[in-house]
Length: 159
Image 1 (cartoon, rainbow, N blue to C red):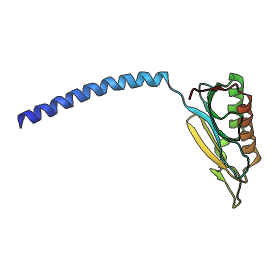
Image 2: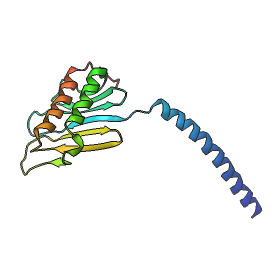
Image 3: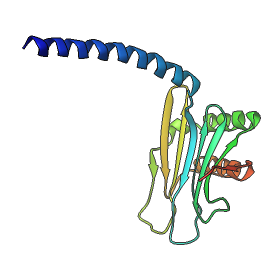
Image 4: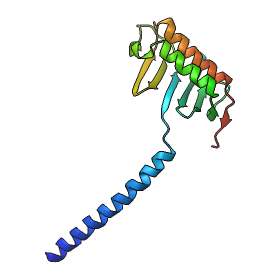
């Protein structure tokens, strides 16, 4: 019984010591990779030739793109958003009062693609689903992100 207690205490001691080391290492790793998605947009399929892709824009201006169907770039790509363009995009989301949009816009119709638009800024984040009936100001933001996707110089990730 004493051996069992000694072994248990030894494991607990080693475990606590290892946890401290891991926390230090994890904190250092987080400092290096402290990236967060600021804007993302996902466009889904329809019965026709709708483009299907997803784009994520991070707080370090890095962008990731995944094209799936009916797009020029199929696969996974990265690019850097120019600083001025990034700042302008943030301003447009703030000016459109993104956080005041409804969470979803839909109607009982079929054969339309769905657009999911996400924005995170100053501790707040929101995802909006646009299937049908979204206000023009939301559609304008969707178009701005789509334009950015077409403007950037994408570099394909190795498969």
